[in-house]
Length: 292
Picture 1: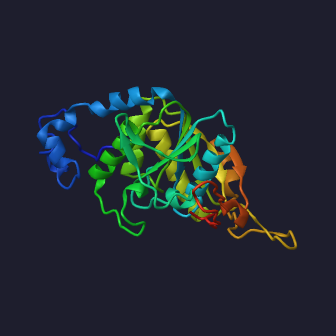
Picture 2 (picture 1 turned 90 degrees about the horizontal axis):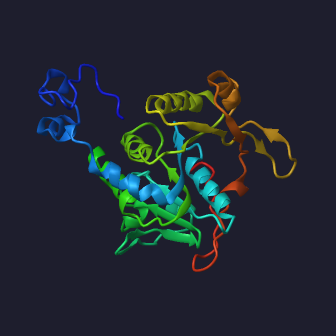
Picture 3 (picture 1 turned 180 degrees about the horizontal axis):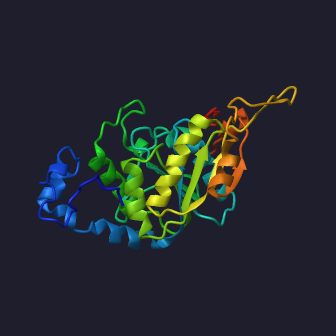
């Protein structure tokens, strides 16, 4: 699925990993070994595993800090409001896993059974998985190269015992990096429904979102639509609306019109959006996480 560098001889070529254009490529050693020519057996394994998951949705953003993880958390909670709907939230932001914090699950650990890793459950019908559960401290840095990140995502999709799930929401890191390529590669074979792309109104965010849209077109991921987060700020006292991030080029609405992509909605900049209340063995807490 990854766009190959100019002059790449291809994994099936006798010059794979040995040609001049291969110098400096992170996959050079893999291609030279011949292993790159063989299909990854995990693709079929994940396809089989995902048969119990009805809908699979990626949440993407071009720019960091636009509220993608907060949106993913609220989307998962919203879907799980129906007690008959089983929802799973997978955090594949390997270097910056914020879902455990947002969901009030810091300090939780993953347990393993004969059927695989067990998700951490917020509610009976809402399970969560994140690399954050595997760290000894939330302050630990994850310093991994691409292949190790890809291996972690492969394990999440193949080895987690998701069970019968109606919606799998995949919270991704910003940009178009190894994590995105791995998720698309493994989930496309399992009928990925598409991607929801999060942006804020200002042009500096929209520039990166256009790259994200281009990425989706290149790897053939359907775009469900765009959500404009932090659209306006409504003063809680006087109720006056202010544009903290001015849409100098028309914001997500104009961009979606130009690119013929659905605008799913606009979310205001409101501290109440970041309030997460938890019951049961999790202590109630408030986290203002609109920009996570």
